[in-house]
Length: 191
Image 1 (cartoon, one colour):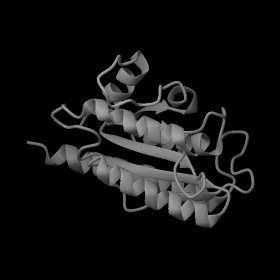
Image 2 (cartoon, rainbow, N blue to C red):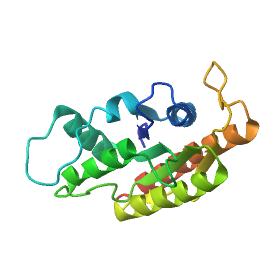
Image 3 (tube, one colour):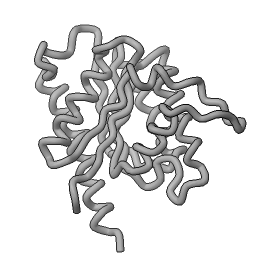
């Protein structure tokens, strides 16, 4: 297998958000395992227009998202937990994948998808993780067995971008490792 392409999608409209830093940490682990990565963070996804399923003009950003996710061997999605579910900008980015509905492999078809949630409390993290996993299933993706849930009531990251807590680092590494493992297994199973 050539270097797998892992796309990270997520963050918030706030630069340097906890969810985007967690996503970047997980992507760094993918790179250490041999992947090529692309981060579609908050700055990118917050520029996407609200997805309209009616036939209309498709923006360059929407095309880029659909094309990059279509080429990806795996995806990692990171969202803050807002009122028990994923953020609007992350949901809108996932809704934009509707542009791929006519593709040979639409949406997230057969791709391993890692999940990362950051929330101010465990209850919001748990419900948000469940919601994101259900959306990934609806988009025909394969959520990895482990999903990271980080309690963001305190600052989670060092100035270097590394998680402060060893358990958080383990969670983000585990998401990355599972996405990479399943991407490689999937590539090995292709005729």
